[in-house]
Image (cartoon, rainbow, N blue to C red; front, side):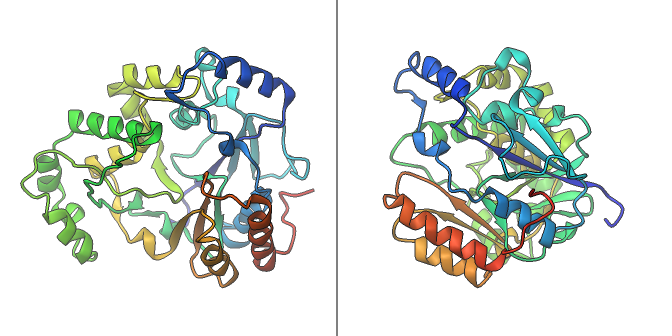
Length: 335
């Protein structure tokens, strides 16, 4: 692994550009209630520079960092950094799908990024490194580290995102057989090193289809060839999704990419939850999130925003102070 190139890809959305807001309002007016136009998806916690500080301090081995945004670079960003590749959405997404106000077309077209290595890790802008990470935390034996953790959970409150994940699972069952996958890689479906996962998956032993996969909202670990495969076999569905200006019912979630790697066996079984934790932010768990950051309880953390954070400015200050405590020094990615 020492000589292998592993890149990071980061996406960041901003609602400050006047031209972007004009286009957003124009297209938003044309869509009904069946799409996701949530404002909180674009509010800023002003934490992005801490992601870059963490990369420089805790993952100095990374080859390149591809930064994709719908806006100009943040004022603090050093775009001349030798490892940084600054891209606009239109540099990644084919022109027939632009403009877009959905992350789906961007994520489904990562493989079109010029110069991207065959192995890469995708960070949303709400994911941060809190401690040292090594290539082996992401890739082993040339394959992404992941867990085939089967799940049949469902949401009783239908929403656009859960619908798109359901659509992704339907495509997986169209192209893969769970029984065939288990026969091909029994130690991946029932990993002896992860007995609780193995026992959990045994509940679905007789089921011929994949009931679903447990959500993993940590950095996504990808092989570029996976994108070529899904576009080859699912082009109609992906084209329809990429044409949606906003996340809409009937879209395919980019979780399809990870599901595809799991169903095809193109991964190495690892306990990714051992070093990563996700906080779906609410007023009730802000303190636990701050504690996790301040004491670096995990190597990686995801601080996922949502409409359950009502005291935004107060809680934003607490998060920023915690990150500043462990990452006080500017990185080379900052001016």
